Image 1: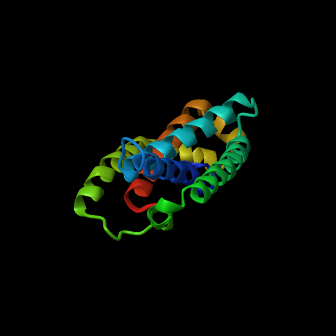
Image 2: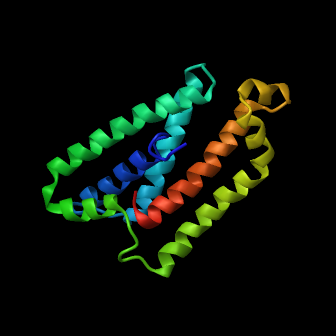
Length: 168
């Protein structure tokens, strides 16, 4: 699913925005690291909400992610309104791009991206089974909860790494 739908982009935006806003008045954290942590936290929260809903389907994951993304975007908008002195720095990161980035940023984010890929690659058969539908995948003997958890973790790591390097 799209990073906006599962909440990764909204979490990254909130993490980066908080890093800039809090960094101006106290201890600072690199924007990329804050975006990475925010994206991971948002997706894990979305996953927990979807699992707690007892629907146990991709639909509940997407609905929880869409609601979380909307809520996080609203919080980012509120922070942008309240902190106009750092508006330019936040807005330029939210727009994304590689301006001001170096090879060290790529190196730092590639570790998490490759870890996410290493988690997802062995799940290729599970993804093939899931493409036929959840009931078909379960009939083939796939543990849906385990597969869904590993896929979400791997995709979240890779997405968060990309977002931390370039913005949303």
